[in-house]
Length: 316
Ligand code: TXA
Ligand code: MG
Image 1 (spheres, rainbow, N blue to C red):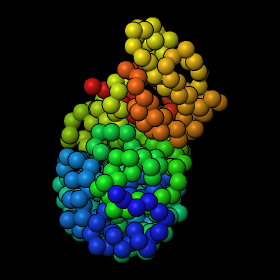
Image 2: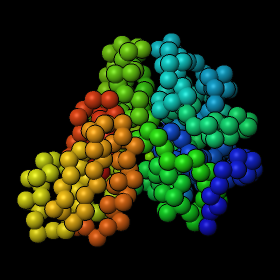
Image 3: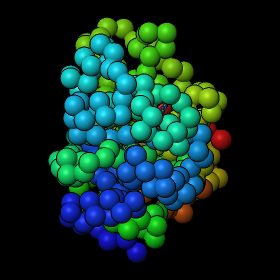
């Protein structure tokens, strides 16, 4: 069993020995290892049962520290970095060879971010290497937003879980890359498109539905509970599924007549809904419901990221 605690020096010792530690961030918990150590990184893939075509995000503590493993930072990337780091933004930047190919699945760009969590920032500052860290869940399942979520599924495999409380954003970082020089959002996430466009102007958004491994991380079915999930008009879906034991995951409105109902935000706040989303999905997934019925939220701010995760959770 893994230990759960907030001891940065213990985390440092384990990571420096080439092993993995689960770390808190403001988005979701990550499963971290020394990004320069191919053996340590290989452990991440094996613990998560993650295919090696799906590359990892590298976490560091400052823009200065980036230069040891990134060749250059384009102007628009630097503008975003200065505006939003530490924060829920990941940038795709040309890598130096010190980053093993396993981290980037052979791509010449590495995904990087500075997470906004005091414990993890202090840990990163104490290390002389950056941390490769995907979300700390078995591949394809719902991302963890608490230390307990990590322990529930990976407790046997991870030696130490650094407990930094519940993630206060609740969905993964927004990933921005460059296609023919144009800023392109590769994954909608915890930083809104509106905020990004305020700094660098209009951006493209990669289509959500791709299941092409050549567009890593955009796999169609992901973040999925074990119980089948359907999204649409909840009242109609309840009628259609009346013979089943129904769990409802609704945005603002309550559905007291069903077996179990989780309301994401009684005040209709998309930020609160994002914070609660993965906990809610996990909680409903532990019930004896036959089906989870849900609905999309308003497509503003973090609503885009919520709807993206719901779509993928419903994909076959
Ligand atoms: O908020 C987050 O981003 C969290 C925390 C722990 O930082 N991490 C996270 O990692 O969500 P993960 O591995 O679950 O998702 C990272 C996504 C993957 O879908 C991956 O395909 C994409 O980032 N990615 C990583 N490196 C890439 C690269 N070089 N080029 C394109 N996509 C990349
Ligand atoms: Mg993930």
